[in-house]
Structure formats: C-alpha cells, structure tokens
Image (cartoon, rainbow, N blue to C red):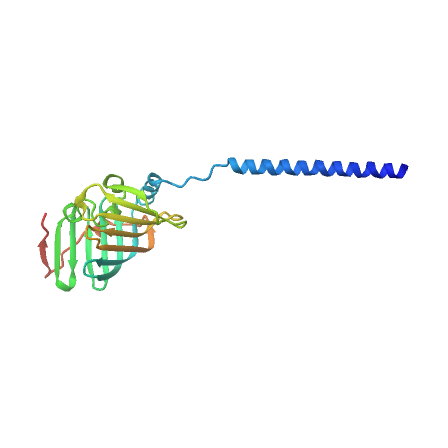
Length: 236
C-alpha cells in the first residue's frame, strides 16, 4: 500500500511538471505569434522616393551602350539601331549610332548637331526647339526634369527586381503621350525607356554596360563640321 501511494505521488508530480512545461511552451508560442503580429511590414518606396533616388544616382551623368527599336503602329514597321551614348547634366548628350548606319546626335545644351556622314550633311539648330524642352529621352541629361515635366506613378507591371515608373507629360508639346522607365531596384539604374506618342507608335531604348559619373570633356559635346559637309539649319 505504501509503495502504491509513493507511485501515485511520483506520477502526480510528473504530471504536474508536464502541465507546467506545456503551459510554458504555450505562453511562449502565444508571445511569439503576438510579436510577429505586431511587426510593421517594410514600406515599399513611393514615387517621390524613386525620383529622389534617380536624381542622386544620375546627378553626375552616365555613359552606356544602347539598343533602340522604333515601331510605327499603323504600318507595322520596326526599325532597329544601336550604339553608344553619353549624358552630362544639365542638357548635354552625345548619341553615336553605329548600326545600321553611322550618324550622330550631339548637343551642348544650347545647340544640337545631327550628322550623317554617308550623306555628307549636318543639321544644326537650337536644342530646346529640337528636343521640345524634354522631349524624346533628353530628360536623361537632366533627370530633375522628371518632377517638373511629368506626372509619375508606379506602374502595375513592376516586379521584385524591377520598378516601372509611368510618366505622363504635364505639357502636350513634348511629342509623346507616355513614358515608362524600367529601373533595376538593386542598382537604381534605368534599364529601359519606352515612349508612346498619340498614335501609339512605340520607341524602346535599352541600356547596357552602364557607367555612372564618367569623365567627360567639353569637346565631347561639341561638333566641328567636316570640310565638304553641307550644313542645314533646323527650323526654330
């Protein structure tokens, strides 16, 4: 009888310890769940955040190789080209097309030169008139124009690796209806620029081998007309 009582007391003590352990584990789990439940998820950067990041990233310009594809929607015609580009704020650009045939678009921010060596011809005029004060992709030479010249939103096509900004011009004189900037989230660099005009004609420019803050010289954005080359003035 005495042995039976000791066994009962032993089992009772073990049961009590087990209940205490289970209660302790339960309280720990509840506190862990509560802690996770009260954590605030990381906020996705908004449009203003991305514009600020681009301004900081591109404040000293960049150079890159580029691929360009232009599509005339109504006629179903595609044109492809490629070459090298150099940008230096404010407003200086150098587009050197190598394919399918060589030609150049160069501006120092005031004057623009369009040189076609095969035709022995250069057209020159005022940069603001030609680019429409931010038309085409000239905003890449002064990224701060994005705030003043466009209404920007984050497009639904954004992914974990890429954020897409949709830009709608506040002024209809820029020559296009919308622009999409595809930005690498990690490097905070523009991978692609896609523009649409009112007829839904599409121009895609894809950058590769991007180099930030390259060394530039003043003459990189100047053009000397070669001897024997016809000069035509662009209409203001």
